[in-house]
Amino acid sequence: MKSMLEFLFSSEITFPGSWAAENHFGDELDEVMKLGVQVKAQIGEEQGALWKEYQEKAQGLENRQCRMEFERGFLTAANLALEIFHRSQEG
Image (tube, rainbow, N blue to C red):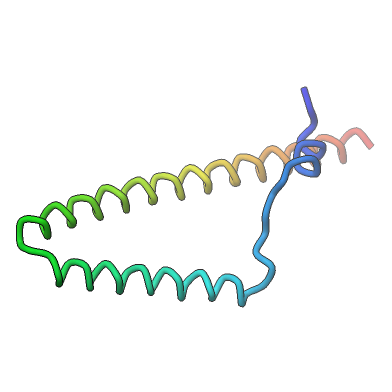
């Protein structure tokens, strides 16, 4: 079994370059939300209901994906902590 440290340093984990990058992501999210409001305002009632259903399902999928990414990161951190603990006990 590959050690957690080897896995961590061999994987392609991406980290945001800076807080500015995180802020830019937030600005883009705000823009998408504003566009959604504009679309809803310009379509009819029947299409509006369909659009709302689509948005709810898309948001649910995105939330589920975020939860899965968090869980994956949490488990990676826990495995890394356990490996460091076991190595410190051996040494």
